[in-house]
Image (tube, rainbow, N blue to C red):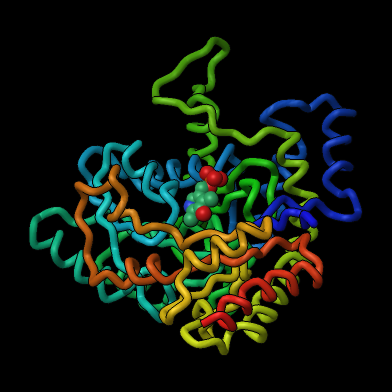
Length: 377
Ligand SMILES: *Cc1c(COP(=O)(O)O)cnc(C)c1O
């Protein structure tokens, strides 16, 4: 018997049909453009939810990172310190700006950027007369980084802090939303994220003027004139009014999604967390994750690939943890400050199916497959 496919994380529209109501509104008013009420309201609603002064809705999280770097003034030859254990979209925009990424190791207690390695990197580059221009920190899988320490370091050295919260919308660090703890924050609404607009992103900041500037760059940097006039390089990065409608609907169910993601994580913890060699991803007490993906590390006889292949045979999708950027062929020439903690997480890590559309019996099916791997040893 062929079972239904279980996804790692797939789009999950609201049962109430909120998204279609907003799309309908856009059609009825013919605002089928990167402008309109849904765009404005999506920005307002998201900014209010995370408690940020302003927001710019963009075509992707990657575009949001790009404009955050640009708003920071990152340009040719500048050093940007970036979490190494992440998706390539965190680092690519550094290259778009002709800047130089320096990759920073993770802390085993958070899986996120190590404050110790961060300060080491800052000192190293200051000694070389190249003070880093920005720190780009990632909140991986909806876990939050050790922000008090990172913020203290960035303030002490006066370096701009950009949070890549693409995976952590709704996650809280000591009661505050990830993406609002540093100077700029970005979110993604790509298809596999905790809420999705099919594709899209958001830049948030309390620097309202800089967010206005980002919107200007995102609409081809059109100067105020009757004719088309440009005194700066422009980009076509603005979110469409249809897409923003999906986002408004999805925002209404974010809490439900986080609740279900947490149940999924707790289920795995209960069912397989005590197995020989299994460790759940680290949830610290100052941390209210959104549990975007439930991840584990395996350091016993059963290896990550055993789990991934066994699940695949049953039509169940799982995958390795992100491969660190300093191990990627494209970024191999750049500096890395650390001791390979992130390499170890990559070697041992598995992202388990975390789709909120899964039923309880789907979850039983998954742990059934995993349990058999331990029974056989
Ligand atoms: C998804 C993701 C991005 C990119 O977001 P897009 O909207 O796909 O451009 C950036 N950083 C991280 C960590 C991500 O997971």
